[in-house]
Length: 333
Image (cartoon, rainbow, N blue to C red; front, top):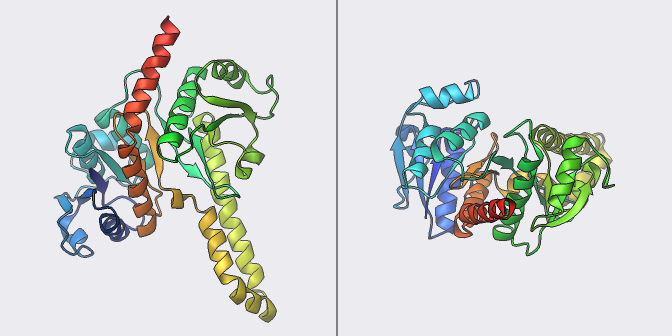
């Protein structure tokens, strides 16, 4: 399979992007990677590898660019060309650590939506205490949502969890302010009624405080709420690590203790880092499009490639398409 990667997107491009790509082709013999970006800069970190090719461009979409305008005007931007490789059949999927809004626009306008999907959803896998993780969608592709959109999110998240995460019967929960059936606003109440009648393992309402406990495998919500949950989890993890570091460096005794606990602290940091699970998938498109974290290092890019490979192998997009067609047929009959 071929995966196109925007080599110029992210805080540490192109170095970490290239190193992650090299690690990926060394690990997966069935993967070929197309790096899209400034060839001269890419070659600073790339030794000859027959399964890594380069599409040269010096145009880049930055974090300051207005997403839709940038995708339409910067026709030769590395992110845009990576998406075109997918749309024109030369790659099976694409990855970028660049501007999130621009990648969503490129996914929609260039790769295209699966017919029947009203709103694609951006979905990362977040950590849990037990290490299993859970899929959260949407985390910002759509700030506003209708019950029918959340219904499709549930279907897409369930399929992804089966095909990529290997969970045979994923538990799907609806994020709400209480677990009771009648709790919430009109969106969640209506969605709850719809979810009871679709072919997923719907476990009912769940609360945000239980997410890290592994209460579900798929948590469904609107993009506005999901983005705040994502940023809260990320910010809390960073704050805890800072507080631990400050406390352990506060005295000679604590520094000695820190030296003993160092391996355990690294394990804790790794468990709380959701980039270990890969990037955030833009579900509902005709082919996998993965948004890696903006601060991705080589390991995070490698994990994004692993995730993308599993999505292609698992035929996630085709399975979502079939499930949506079935749901639409059942609805009309």
